[in-house]
Length: 207
Image (tube, rainbow, N blue to C red; front, side):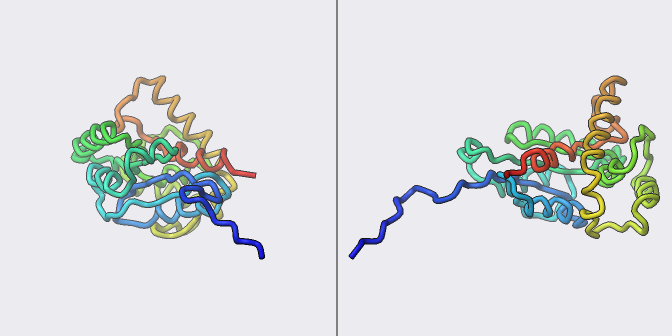
């Protein structure tokens, strides 16, 4: 009678996926609904969301730090992102600077959208350097392409076919601001760095 082969302790039968920790603003589900779809892709990454319902960038950053693993997990390729909007709010600038300083010390990458996350959606359809003075202006512009757009709804399926256009347009905006010496987060309007997370998934789908 053959003896069953025992698995050696400490050995995994399948490769561990690298964890992407993401902290988002807690007042709406827009970002989480969007990012959660990438977990359905066959890549070497998996997204985990940090706990918390804060909208303050600094508090989002501390929530990411509290949720993520030990420093040794970084050696396995895990990464952490603090995702927030500038909201065209000068009062928020100090909190943003505090978040940037904290994230740099903790090894957390910052991903901001100016003025709000929906600029990423808009870039799926058009490129523009128009400055938006309030978030509502972005939403109105987006409704030309996504009828009856509302926050906290899932639009991933209709957006994703244009994801490479959005990445190209986001990088083009980044170049535009660099050429015009716009370096501070509050002066890069419009802009978004969401593409840096998205690229991890669309450019690394396992076969």
